[in-house]
Length: 245
Image 1 (tube, rainbow, N blue to C red):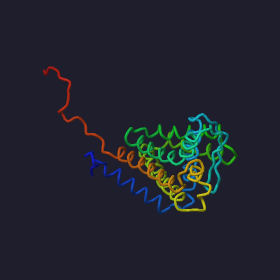
Image 2: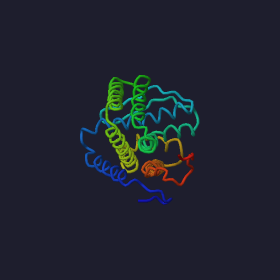
Image 3: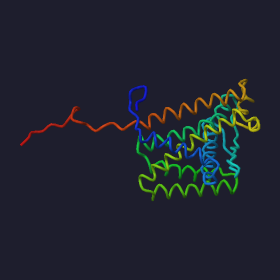
Image 4: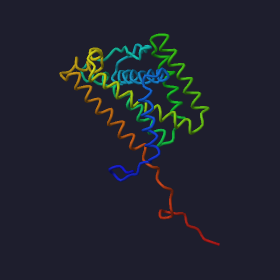
């Protein structure tokens, strides 16, 4: 299997990713996946928080709810561009998280580092910004689970966990954006609606824009991560020469 540039894709990785996407889709409504949905919501809200800080604002608190909703209460700087950046960051934040997770696991082999970084991220967000006991308990509990997984899971187990998380994040991004595009009941409180309030662009157009951007990011990073590893030197490149005895 080849990309348009001629680079070969690792068929085994592609098949595994598609399988996990199917598993996530099939068991989407299973209670077992509820913690993962909250994890992606936390990624979404963290995107808002990071954009707020980068644009010179301040984050007061982040809250998660058992119904898989979330909010980031921030004091935003004045200016339309800053507000657009902050409101948009939730859409692409989770997409970038899934893309980097896939890339770090398969292209750079940073298996345990990825889970360790996620552990630290959740702990820091919980301590600094958790707005209630439920949010703090989720952040700290999930941080402990990911930290233990990073330390004790075998290499194959870490790969599977990271890949499933990446596949699930991609699914959640698609479903989240679909909700903003087509479900008017949530449109009035969505990030797309907030963007429409500060720009002349309607909410459905913002959702469409960030759907395209998010899926493009996931697609490009997935293609990079799923390319087959280059073969070892077969004797045609530069070699160290020496005198034979």
